[in-house]
Length: 243
DNA sequence: AAAACGGACAACCGCACGCAT
DNA sequence: CATGCGTGCGGTTGTCCGTTT
Image (cartoon, rainbow, N blue to C red; front, side, top):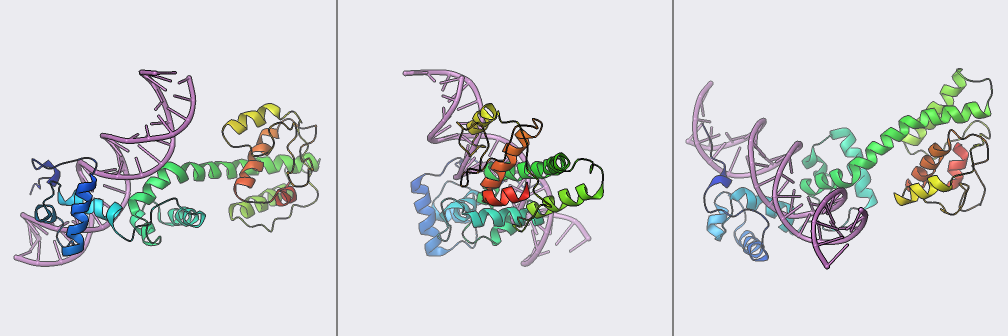
């Protein structure tokens, strides 16, 4: 059997819907319901295929649809459900009242995908960064289990957004102070949230410097993680506790 | 000022599934 | 069981619009 796609039928309109078409569809559905999408456009007097009508109704015209920006809670829900379910947008949409699968799918591709990938890459980098931090403060400890325990703990706690992290000892970060250029560069991409004019990366609340002259190799990582932390809603104190 | 570019969102397309015959 | 049909789903494309060059 070869089914002819409904949209190939001659005379049917494609593309964006006009307000008039929307009004016709809304009025018809409210009056007669939508038991048969294929027959609906003809009955309603619309030059659209049934599929197009159904999509327009379910994704845009339905009265229970919630318009507007996604809340933080909705974003987190989408990210968590996507980790579990993958691209099963309709299943994810079922958990978010008022949101459609299409809307969630679009939001994922345009907003959330990049962020999640960036976080995943960052978590990978974190182990190396923490190893560097540990070794810079614990000479002679390289290669032993303490380093792995420390970095593993940090990684797991950060990944699960657990605030109760305590680093073993005052692992003070020593880094090059000349952050002007990297801060300037980062601010262009909204990654650096601190004062761009400051040559040191500082806690905004306490003014305490966490970057001291010394190790040039980790300054960029520190800027990255500091900003990721702030973006994630962590306090500077917690950041200090970790490093 | 205008062209080029890129992000956001709406809409389309093809496949798969379930149900009726 | 095979076929026909309606619908749901996810991937992809098209279009609009703001920003950058």
